[in-house]
Amino acid sequence: MGAVLIIDDMEDLRFSLAKVVKKEGHTAFTAASGSEAIELINASIIDVIYLDIGLPDTNGIDLIGRIRKINTDADIIMLTGINEAKTAIDSLRAGAIDYIVKPFELLEFKTTLRRIMQSKLMEKQALISQQDLSPDNLIGTCEKMKPVKEAIKTASEVDAAVLITGETGTGKELVARAIHNGCKQKSGVFVKVDCGTLSENLIESELFGYDKGAFTDARSDKKGLVEMANGGTLFLDEIGNLPISLQPKLLRLIEESTFRKVGGLKDITVDVRIIAATNANIEEEINKGQFREDLYYRLNVIPISLPPLRERGEDILLLATYFLHLFKKELRKPIQGFSSAATETMLKHDWSGNIRELRNLIEREVIFCRNEWLGLDSLQHHISHVSLNSQQELVPLKEMEKRYIQKVLKYTGNNKSMAARILGISRTTLRDKLGEIE
Ligand SMILES: Nc1ncnc2c1ncn2[C@@H]1O[C@H](COP(=O)(O)OP(=O)(O)OP(=O)(O)O)[C@@H](O)[C@H]1O
Ligand SMILES: [Mg+2]
Image 1 (cartoon, rainbow, N blue to C red):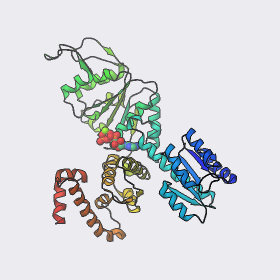
Image 2: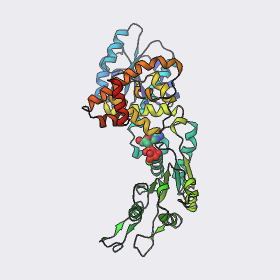
Image 3: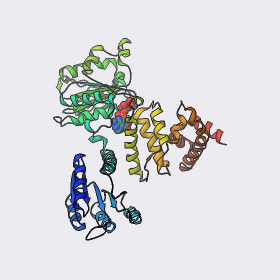
Image 4: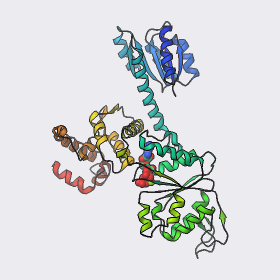
């Protein structure tokens, strides 16, 4: 996990803190003096530093400055004596993030360590680009995500077709990419095809390509997406919209790994992994005769059904914290976390837009946040079941909303369409709300 450096001249303390660090699963380094510490920091990647204020060869505060020149990322926590409160504050100014007053219980030490490591982990995850996602760092630990993670692992190991279902914004594409990235033996690319947006004619030539002469204006051959995905993954998004006329061609691709280009005379063999996704009810489409049952079974070898966000309990907060870290870093805002009201509201909200809704909301809120704690005021207004004891808060909430809207309008130079987009409401709703304000 992480690497922790303990700098203190008391050998007993170094020893017992290092023991806790190791027990928590991290690597422990120790140093008895400033010079020893600098040597270690030069030589290793350190995530967290516990630093004693009074060292034999230097004082902790000066040392912070020297550490920062070498390592700008590590979180520094001061170990201070009971009479050093003033120095503790100076050290915060110098760049430490927290302090513990000696003598302290090992439990207190362990708690701060856990909290810091948790937030480091979130930051790291925030830095992992979506392209690099693997099943292990998909965010979510709730019960309902366990079978999902299992299925992603299985899918990465075997070459069978995968069908991912779930409401809009639940992460279907992300899961498809995670499967692709988890596939060690594949070297090819991830090719996404949106079956919902291309016209019937276009989708056939886009998918399978065409041979010269297939159309009057086809002057040369064209490679299709299937061929481009050779050795990799073909992700068929909104598979429910794949025209019925094309379904036999896809079925053949899955069963025999071969296809023909539009106007082509010979079979082409490819090695592609097929992942399909849909938020429609395919069984219904089958009953209506719009989707072939045999294709459905061929696609559904490894089914993955993503739970809606509202059913993911604490994961909501985990994801929220992840997005908060992501955007506060990007937008350089000194936000500490969510207010307790925001946390409560997030757990109650119905999240019809799922993770995408959560992500957009937090991005928007971070942009406009002027406080240390993110309040998610716009969400509080939308929530439908307001409990009785929070009804008194409704008045200031209206006031907050008013200020929020005015802020957004100012930010957009009074451009109402853009403001409505940022606020996540329609222009009509915005007009109504403006009417209320005036
Ligand atoms: N477990 C997760 N961890 C972090 N971010 C996630 C996770 N799941 C989804 N997201 C983010 O949520 C957003 C929506 O995800 P995605 O596009 O994969 O959803 P979808 O199910 O394909 O939606 P749609 O049905 O609307 O196409 C993306 O920004 C994605 O990065
Ligand atoms: Mg999608």
